[in-house]
Length: 109
Image (cartoon, rainbow, N blue to C red):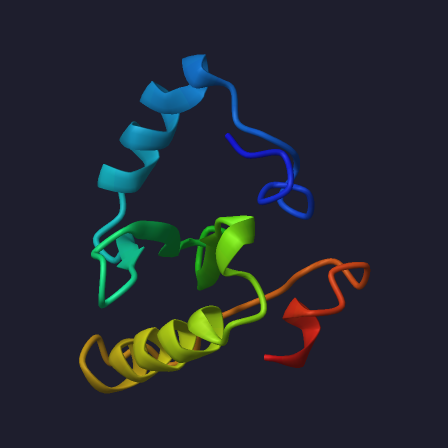
């Protein structure tokens, strides 16, 4: 729901769309959502998803971290782990990750 977090992801999600999102999450065999937690405090700092891409065939990897945690390397660390899992444990042939060119920080992953 955070406007800064969702800036490059189509804007904040409406609460009333949560059922639709929940249905989508559970309708695909490889849909996965992981909560990212800070190790020392166990505080929830964000979310990583591996779910159907818009073409309906491939899977897309996304991350959303709360602004407080930006620039600390958490997204990079988590995305490397999930990418490894996707190829080595789920045996996926490819994973898509994209962002808007305006999201310069995320373009370096």
